[in-house]
Length: 102
Image (tube, rainbow, N blue to C red):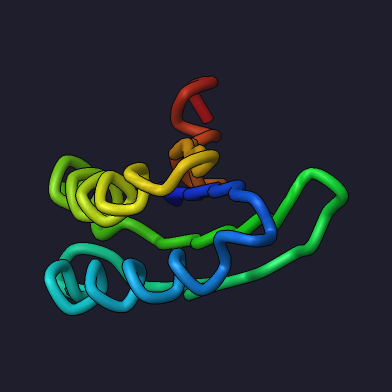
């Protein structure tokens, strides 16, 4: 399973986002026993603002912990006006094939 965290925020909030992100990573550091970072930070500038993605491969049986870790980090950033985020779950090939009985 993969967790895809997507964030969007106004361009003029970039410095504030970086400051809080660094605090969030200090408070909630990566835990490789729970998930493996695939894309630590991917940034894309759009006309609507900055879009950032984080992708993690979740260890078997660690979904709740991995989701809580991502959610807690992102929650720290939602105090910034205009900051929006979501977390999507994707299955890997093996998991997807199991859902259709293969």
